[in-house]
Image 1 (cartoon, protein in one colour):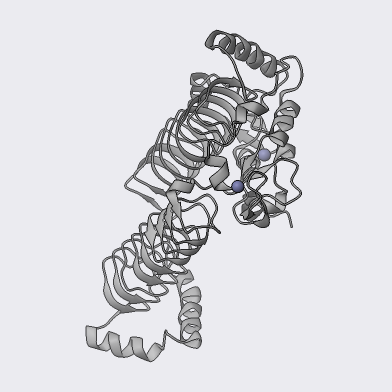
Image 2 (tube, rainbow, N blue to C red):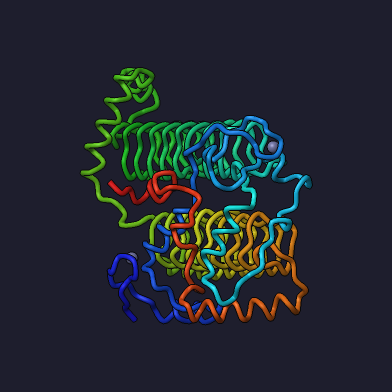
Length: 422
Ligand SMILES: [Zn+2]
Ligand SMILES: [Zn+2]
């Protein structure tokens, strides 16, 4: 079935498989097209617009993703994760018959937010990083997990990488983009399993290559021409790649030359029945980009290890999730922003280890809460049942948080990185 997007008016398709998924997780069909849905989620993620300000609890000077004049309190990572405060103290009564999102915004404006999306105990010496996890000695990295001694960009499961974007399982990589399993490589793009390569494009399993395109398991090649080890070393030294001019020459050559070679229409590796680009080890997943280990997922980007989920970004280990952005280990979490280890939650914003919560902000280890207020299990079921019904009637349930209630300006959010306004 095709329908017009409520935001951009373009026609988008809701396939039979999509309809089955929406039924399975009991949500109405989307009214925004996949791209407008992604843009709306991305409005709620600010990776790299960082500010100096004070922690509103311990008063220390900190770096935060929120301006000093933000309406809501901001706590440093040590304070936020501590037991020195309780987010249920900020609980509000829900008014079932009144619009949901203005009430959600009122709650978002009063509950303290975490300065940077970092788990203190899992990030050492990473004061200027945001959205990093299991990280050590990193600087200005955003969206990086299991990284050590990295600077600038978003390396993933990597070590000693600088200026890398969408690079995974690599070491000593510099200025690489969309690469995997690289070792000591510079200026490479869309390559995997390469060692000691410079300025290569779409190469696989190559060693000691410079300015090559589309090679597989080759060694000692320059501009796709094979040499003996000795010839290669003489030629390589002559290129003076350690100088600015030499590197500029090699990159300029690659820039022109790569356009003359045939390219793969998309990079889908070890996967079955998938559409999108940069997909690895996945099955029956559609319209997905930069993903790995997905089963039965659609409209996802930059995620790893997901099952039966739609519209998820920047997450690991998730199942039955929908319209969800940020953080790991979630089951049946919908319309959520940075929630971790959560189960059966709707409209949660930065909640950790929670079950059965609806419309909550900054909660840790809670259950049966609505707007940060605790209820008995029966009360919770009855109230959320009525709330969901009223929201469906008002056309609210099924939609992600409206972009006007984002704590970030458009220019601060990653929406601006991918969909710049100017
Ligand atoms: Zn649209
Ligand atoms: Zn503090």
